Length: 214
Ligand code: ADP
Ligand code: ZN
Image (cartoon, rainbow, N blue to C red; front, side, top):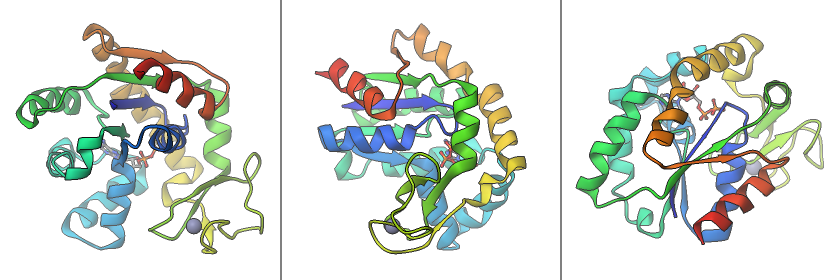
């Protein structure tokens, strides 16, 4: 399975990617997770990325492309991959299309997680993420709370709200999504590679995508 997951922030890309990883063994590649780990490591990339991320803005395309070109050449990608949060602009999608033949990769399709705006807003404000970099489990104070309040079920670390999950940054991320990422839906449609997924839950979405690939 070699796919791109499209969808608004909070559409459930991370959850769907994890479910697909369990079903198929394809590796989840989340640009957001990679960037957050660069920020924690205070790498050169991390130092540049942090400002953009905290403001809810996109990290510049060149930096993302350099990062992804390296990532896609790692051996674990041979088992397939699920791109979660990339590409996010037409420029990134075009650059990816140019890069893939050189790397001997062909995309199966882009799955667009089509989720209502009210659901998205509600999810983003109630989302909590495990602060342990090796875990990063995702919870929701309403629909998927931790067993002990504020503590990750899996690893016991505190669960926190991300720096870009303030109301202001969320609203900015949604605007950026509408302006920069929504055009990718027609981009992949024109390539004949779009799968629109509109289901009630992330689990059901993962199942629909999995069925499509078999
Ligand atoms: P979400 O999908 O919930 O917005 P992510 O974890 O995918 O969150 O991304 C968090 C932030 O990381 C984004 O707001 C953006 O600043 C940065 N980022 C992630 N992926 C990309 C990308 N492909 N291009 C540019 N910036 C990105
Ligand atoms: Zn954890």
